Image (cartoon, rainbow, N blue to C red; front, side):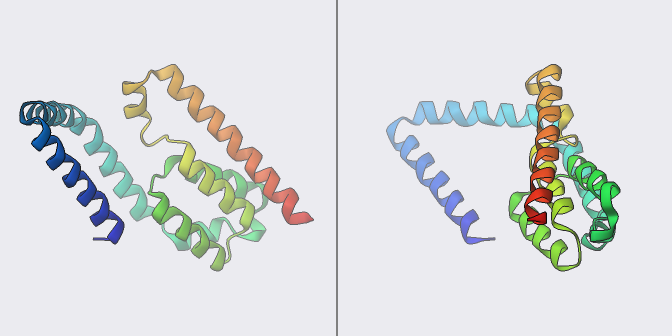
Length: 162
């Protein structure tokens, strides 16, 4: 367990203790409501985690760097944007992965597109997003994020050519 995780859990436990001391009844009710919400979201999150686990075992850094190299051209940009859109991982993993891929020979614009879509486009968790918001809003958010990722790729290309 990382230091950040320990700190977050420690702060959560401290705040729960303060809440319990201040008002036991409200704290108990809040925990009960939270558990009910958790039970409600588990059927949505469980398949999501399963899909993410499968995707992360299939899409390895070596595979990504092979298809996102300097010579991949337009196809590399499209693949980077697409792979990022269908993959899900924590920023704590994604950014070091991006640096590792660049060290393994992947090109900067392709990795920029991959990382931006990885963090902003969420096809893997679209079902959960459209359940809690609405389908139209989820589609708009994903399309706008994808267009933004294309803009980022173009900016990186222009900056790289200077």
